[in-house]
Image 1 (tube, rainbow, N blue to C red):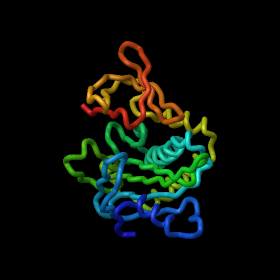
Image 2 (tube, helix red, strand yellow):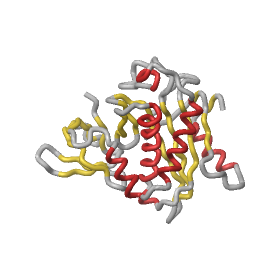
Image 3 (cartoon, rainbow, N blue to C red):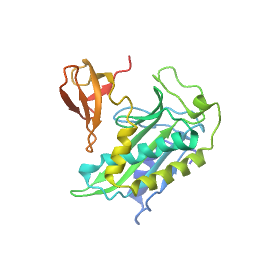
Length: 239
């Protein structure tokens, strides 16, 4: 598709109108999104034809309480591509679902689920990866792209193939291996960072210690107390 409001929304719609079950790993990608979405109310900005914008349909054999595992699969698939295929060794995963190179955002993920009482019926994982764009709007706080990092231009199609192959690899690993690997890539682990507590607006200096398998972030205060937060309770405060 040359242009779509949002690849995730398009895939939701296809599932709703298609009578047969759509195959796992069905992919939708587009040159341009008119209403790309990020976490919560965030939008995703991208120049036409320059970046990887895709959504992939999964039928994960995962219970709803373990749904963060799917975010880990996707994050690691992109991180692997950047580290091993492109050679960007400074790639990390910023909790819960951004991919960073050094201190700049190169990719974002939006995973949405259709749940029933006991199962995830299916998941749609949206990926936005900045590839060949070299000028970004001034209001984006810290964007980067493959082009900016390496001064080269890349095939979006090859990137999609590589990330999908990585995803199939991680889906075949045990939960423990996936989670351990995610933690090894965690941005600013064992470092004090400024966080904004969303309910109060206060800024706290907290040390990133751990992410639980449920997806909750575990941090330590200066005085050594452990605190746990969900992604809608706290955000990094980029000074």
